[in-house]
Length: 351
Image 1 (cartoon, rainbow, N blue to C red):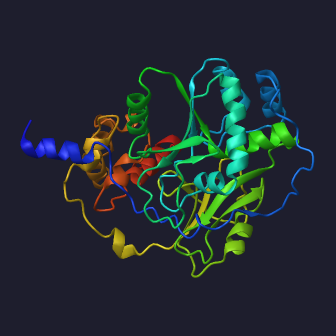
Image 2: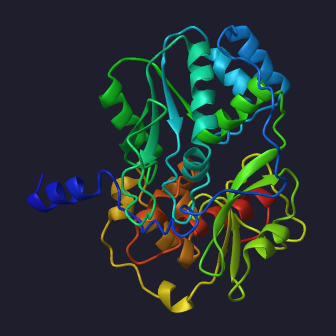
Image 3: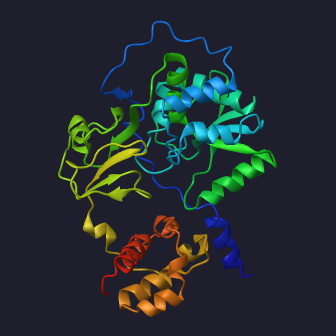
């Protein structure tokens, strides 16, 4: 291997650090659209069995925001296993703080939920994970909440497997389970207060939002209502649900509504000049592709209209992880153009 190849591999094996832009949303309190009075007589959770905790999670219809799966189902899979319990408050995409924000603002509820989940797993090995490259925060991230340590880890992008490898190195062969921080808040409320999950935590931010913040919104709240709540400073060119790396653009915010896994509403105004660069042939996209593809070549052939060529280059194996677009210094819309091509193919439209 040449020296330049070694340097290149060392630089990009963990991806790059995107500007996080968490503030001012992260330092503001979580806005509850329908404030709920504290429960006067919360249930004593100390003597509850694992089955009782699972039943409460199931009856409350709690969904883990990290993957959209029922929390009770995920807990039952590792019930009594003694696996390490890791709480996802990573939020490594720009603007998004819809896990870290509630974890910090509602730390007592989150910690209580973690202890309940740990009882189901039969473990005392718990930790909350946050992104180690959050440097713009005005909030001091503590080392622990209620005795539960907070650990800084690498992000999920450009490929989640990087983070999984880091956790495997840290925990060795010990089994671990990753659960969402917001799901832990809802678990506490379900067990101690008998409250079903009727809300989700959403970051409302972007360079067009006048008052960015995290909001606890009732499920089914129109997206436009949350945008109006936080205010627009200028007309956005895109409104994205989810993170800027993994979200989807929406056409009409009046018809879109919050769901259990919405995560973020981002109002973005793009400067077309920022996307006018040409590919410099650096090869970073190829280096980080978890499928071993050559995204640069695929993009070139797509733009030439050589659709047989892109199939031969293995475009069908693309998992849409967005690693290539994430790491591209020229801001090429590699993943986006691949996704558009595959949508047209799936729809049977002519190329």
